Length: 228
Ligand SMILES: *Cc1c(COP(=O)(O)O)cnc(C)c1O
Image 1 (cartoon, helix red, strand yellow):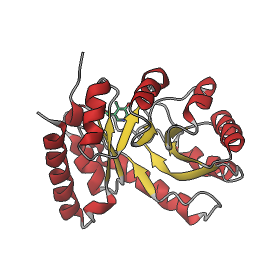
Image 2: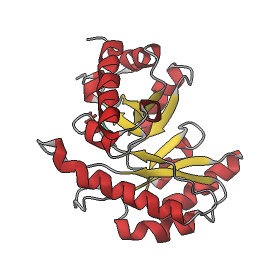
Image 3: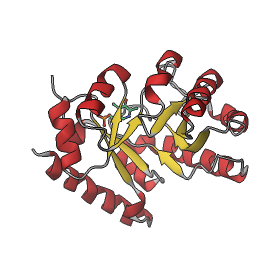
Image 4: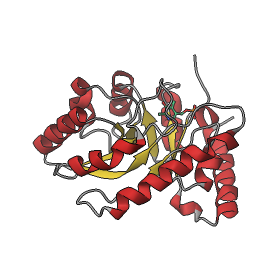
């Protein structure tokens, strides 16, 4: 099925979720996660009118970004090593995986050097799964206090990944937890920490995430399929 058709179906489901929760569908942006697919399908994504592209590996993403002439708004959604920061800052408009001070310091250094402000989501491990990256919820407030002192980082929101479960309803508490943390962070009124966004929801659970306040959903398999 063409990406444009899949996208129309996804948007329809987002609208339904917004109706159920009294939200404006215009507040929910779709990031097409293209990590499973090649250049052609990534191009098809952009040609379908999807503006936001998400990738989790620097080495695979950058050649695509170059070949596509820097079209689109690129989101780095994977675990980020410090030695890769120089390849990400200035190319990806958003980093969704800020989860430790050493990483923040490196982003700050690189962004300053370029004279830009890097938009970051703080990744939170709401579910507490061992296998997941992200800060424990109780460390988020002290962390954003430190990051707010860095002039070249803007904390645009919080990001989480819910556990994969058969019944997506079971993920609801994770998304609610992130929303509650967002309120706490916003109440601090820290400089450069407006945090209006919540990056949450994937192919399996995006409707629940939208009902609970997602402003960016990250959709891979449901939108672009998987290529070998
Ligand atoms: C792969 C990935 C996604 C998309 O996963 P799907 O289940 O295919 O929609 C979203 N977020 C992150 C961080 C990912 O690594």
